[in-house]
Length: 101
Image (cartoon, rainbow, N blue to C red):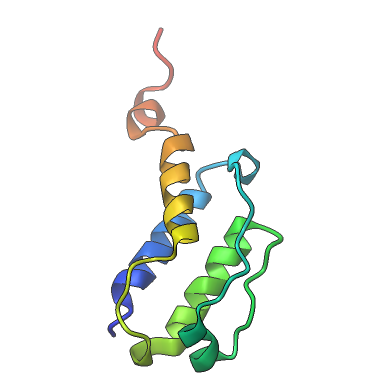
């Protein structure tokens, strides 16, 4: 499936969102749907009530579009979610060792 790298990015964004408090993200979910996704899926707007709902809807749309959607990088919004979540998420060292004494 040509969109599989995009699916992986969206799944990563969802995983990272589960590790952070969404309210700490300094931006709102983007409702924008690309023209080709609109044409292939009929989705005209992504939900803006939460980042999780937004990214989940993006993932569902990409999966629905399937092979007809060309391979591409994630949207600026999804890239921003990933970067900010990585910045805000506790490091794996913190999770394994706890706070330094």
